[in-house]
Amino acid sequence: MNLNAHQNAFLLDFAKLIVFVDNHDDGMLITEGEGWRPQEMQQIYFDRGMSNTLTSNHGRRLAHDLNFIKGGTLITDKASLKVYGDYWESLSPENRWGGNFKSFKSGDTGHFERNI
Image (cartoon, rainbow, N blue to C red):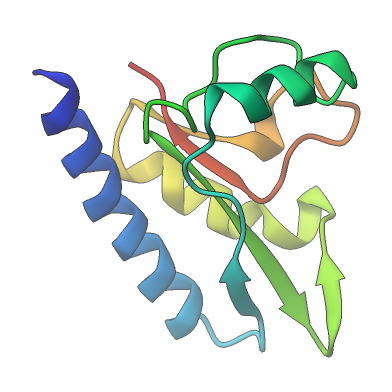
């Protein structure tokens, strides 16, 4: 599968995730976070210690972040968002949820990516 086909598959799964969150009856709202990230921004994140790598699936258009909001509060704890991460990872063995990342103390719970 070429990169464009992976990007397409990622986007279709991401659409399913958005619908899943919207249909899940827990009062959670989502807003858009970061999608595509230029290399210059990745360099800034790396230099500031916000990323451990100079490469990112955001730069390959294979990652997107969501903001989860409930009762006007941004929700970032893994336990509250696990249902969404589990759903995301169930869509494809290539899908990874940032809440399961070991490189961050509390994970990157708003991050959804396809790792190819």
